[in-house]
Image (spheres, chains in turn brown, orange):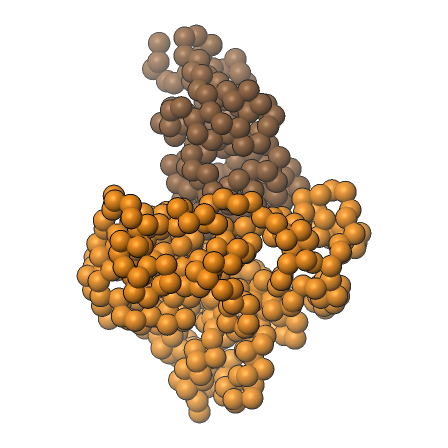
Length: 154
Length: 370
């Protein structure tokens, strides 16, 4: 079943965080969040967008059409090449939010051509959870988060 | 990708090296530019299991870009074969293991660039001035107290693999019981730290060029993080790298980053007069230019007489090609031990060159932490 914006609590928990634009544009989607840094080459499958690194929190899960929320990039200089190919293969994330700016992740975000933001006023890894609906309005430097209804939540 | 290749080399370069769907006619490069490691050994592609068509395409591409001034070193270790920047030179390098070597050991300045930014830098001679190009960003972030002897290549690999995971993209400053390293050891250390983490620079006071002292290594900043590396940490790194359980080894891979001539000499010495197991295959990787030397020295002959293959231009993690049916790999490279399981689904044993050659001779893994 597809996740839709209506599956999310419209009130009262819309969280708005300001941050810095890396790549412009505006996109929204379901968040996939990891506390682990991500490798591009040797870390993702560019054909289906899954994380393949052994011992990675997201191993076997795909960021295709999701808003990818992660600490930053690590590993090979093939980071951008693999996110670039993920885009050409139609499996790129819809948007990216990350904490630590480096050349690897900056170039990767540019060639992914998806809205990307960093330096949010609160740590996105603490505020956003997998499954939340997140709108990344990079042009205006705003991230909107709709918390997903959790089981047992009133 | 095949569709792109049909449109010609300019189309490939434009899309993959410039992120431009508009086809740019590639001019001569203006910066000193070399080809990094590739997926295909130009002479032994059939052993890799690569089609003649693809190999032919690579040869044509090399000729095409060679005429535009790109030097076909085809190695992850350009600093071993004549591309050795001087301290302070601004570079735009790819290949994480070469980047960390360039910054730390040579004292030249580069961020970990990617295919698209190096592609543009080659044509323009320009790269953004930020990150590791700026002196203030090159100071240490973590003081590492090495409490056990770190001397051989395997231990430098373990130290790097442990630290990368802890410091992420920080700049470790090593103190304590690391013996005077050489090119080979630092090549392995940096490659490991840039695989488990994102280390692009480190300092070893009194060894690396921007750290005459601990104070200089930290650029005068206060030391915020201190960590210890002892027997427990070494054990953790070893266990994280060894994901194999089956001691029957199909494939032994030596030389990531690409071997130096003395590493190949060591391998040849261990193999001389012996034959590798019928159940195992051994590939030894080195830069094309050094292979010429290994041939003349007779090292290549010894290795091939024993049943091994000496390869250039590539490595299994890059090419995604190994001997058919490979399930268990033994390697002296922390980097390959880290990446091969993710990329190809094999399981890996990591150990010393000696352990790996022993595995090639017997088809069995008997290595371990000494």
